[in-house]
Image 1 (cartoon, rainbow over the protein chains, first blue to last red):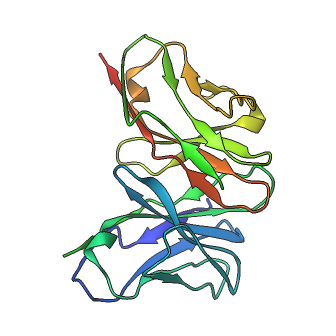
Image 2: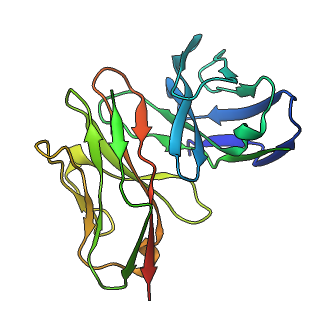
Image 3: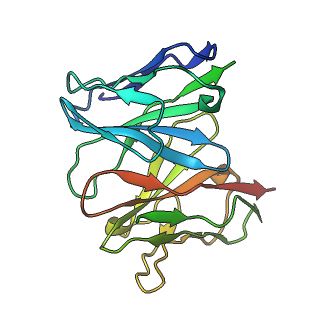
Length: 113
Length: 109
């Protein structure tokens, strides 16, 4: 069965370190998205991609970057982790056709100390 | 600008009572509206979408363009409905989906 997987499930890092969260999907979807989930803020879009070599900024992109070198993967990098980036991160994908839903990964809980 | 508003952070309802989770949106075109649900320790999953006009797990939602609302309803709450519910909107210019802040539904026994 097709799926979308995120790794690691949990990560603790120190302020200032670079961190990369992995997202891999086997749906063969062109569109991939990264969200962060915070109490009181819901889900906020960080970055998204509509295909290989395409990346776009979402509403809370500062301090984050993504790259899309193939269809399956959209890694999210925190260039210099800050405590404000402590959150649960969700990756999602869709096929981009009309009314198609998002398929979500299980999430990565990141703690920046 | 696109915006999704869920006015209630927490909604507590007795088992067997009706449920209504409110969602209002702001969008200048014709959006697609969705409800997603996150059960404890599970990933977010699609509950229903307005275009399908379907009932899933007893839940329905009607798009009211005049009131720009997409409220989620269920006539008789069940304990297994306890979860976090997110209303979401996709505009007609691109594929990105934005979410409201979510409402935690707590079904009381």
